[in-house]
Image (cartoon, rainbow, N blue to C red; front, side):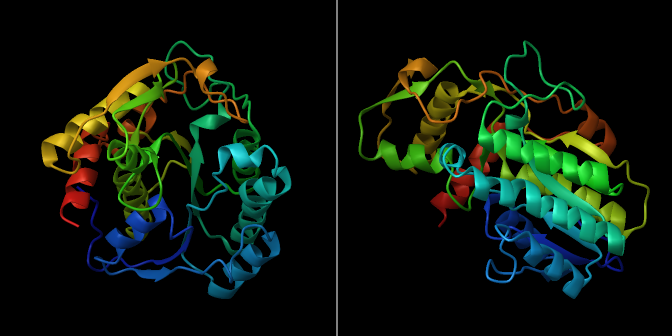
Length: 304
């Protein structure tokens, strides 16, 4: 259940990336509450141009910034490093400087790709990073620029995001289910599928604390739905749940394959499970299993 603000607690919230998976879900929730939302268009705040981000913050002077904007085309980033760096790193650095000058706290979304993916147990927030892709490196550079500049910041690292809005693995699987009887899906990459609504629940909890002027433990948190699986396991769960709800008419057979059979320009972490104990303890509201988010998403699609 989403966190609700007290009726007298109102914030002026600047949201970058309001059209993305997390941003759209966040706007939907905040529109149901007494909050003032600023959702600049890409024309006004293009993260490929850091100076626009500075100007936007100086113009609106919000109470808090939520940054859900990122260059997430993981494979394309390998050949478009300049743009990925501008969006994921340089604009975040500009945001941090502008926020520091105006004493504006920031809630920022990051990724499991900052880790090398060779761990044997879930990653903690202070474990050594070491991305193997341009996407992961540019995200890490942005995270460090923010953390090293702005004391009042919360960085939420997440993974395998899916939800009602935007493009994601669940929607791809549903589309393929209607046209194919068999699919090959990678079975040697382990992670935590994360429902966008669960990330929003965490963002709302921090926003509520800000609105009510309660103390906040600033810093980096891992924010993923409970439960871990592989892409193959996730695909099978998607088809089973979608078939039971009548979202798809047939269930394809899913064959497990190694990553070596599905080469991509950017390497994927073999193991990027995030330990969320810190977030669970801080917010005192552990996020539900990813299967619950999957059910919510598919019910939403079913109901149109």
